Image 1 (spheres, one colour):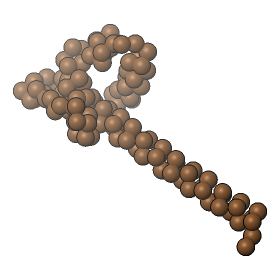
Image 2 (tube, one colour):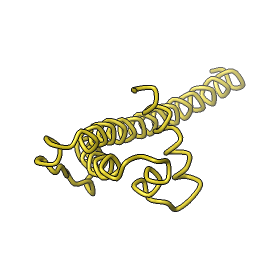
Image 3 (tube, one colour):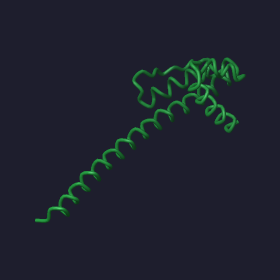
Image 4 (cartoon, helix red, strand yellow):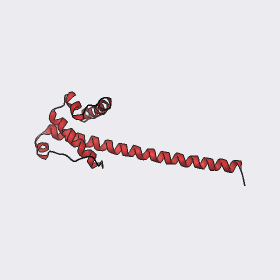
Length: 121
């Protein structure tokens, strides 16, 4: 079941980039039960909030989560996927900043070395 959801998440991300379709609508179009799609949407918002996104909002229909396995599975999948996505984006942004800083430092050092080579004291 986990590989099915991994495939779903990859397809979901690609589908969302290609069109202005909501995650909920996309899941329904893929044949997932409405309860799964509801849970995924709530879990995704919660996962984004847990990862530190200010606009994220923790949402979980606890009575439904406890009684409806499809909602619970969707909630868990949505939470993990969206939390991981935020963390991945933050990691990529951090690595980009470090790379830019390192490239700037390298350019400064190269310029200083070139200046010393061309104008020895």
